[in-house]
Length: 112
Length: 111
Image (cartoon, rainbow over the protein chains, first blue to last red):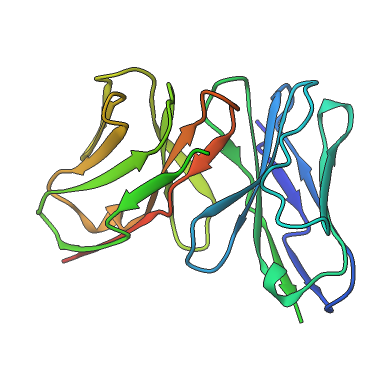
């Protein structure tokens, strides 16, 4: 079956521009996470959606970052006024409640 | 706030040897995962550990959980080159439900 789909797979943008990253989770998965992975580093938690509950935004690094999940399905992570330190791979993952995460292939963001 | 620490962060070992990766976490949890990541790839789930004393095995990898010590181990038996990858543990916070990852352990198995 279809896995978690992320788009675009690669994004190069100029410093100061806004970007939108999209995640299509597996159908029926109630939990959706966004993580950021810098080169050779671990996964930094950004935001967590669980069903209809209010999202846990405690990992968003600044107010330039925001995310939404529409209809309990597709999610968009938006970064405004991008900075070079935002360059990383952004990973989305989804799961049924209390189950292992299924990861997408990530969006590699490069801010020049 | 939940913190997850792995050690070592990098491990170079010879084929045929045994070694253990450690994962410590700072607050109560009832669920721990181990993931594998190959270079340039996304993460693949290896094990789910749900209770104190839980042990799971798959091939040359064995994972265990001690919730009282807040410690999980991933033991590698008679390593082979195909096991070269980065291994992450991830812990679910009992308070918030969110999943926090350790820094990862990069394993390099040399012939």
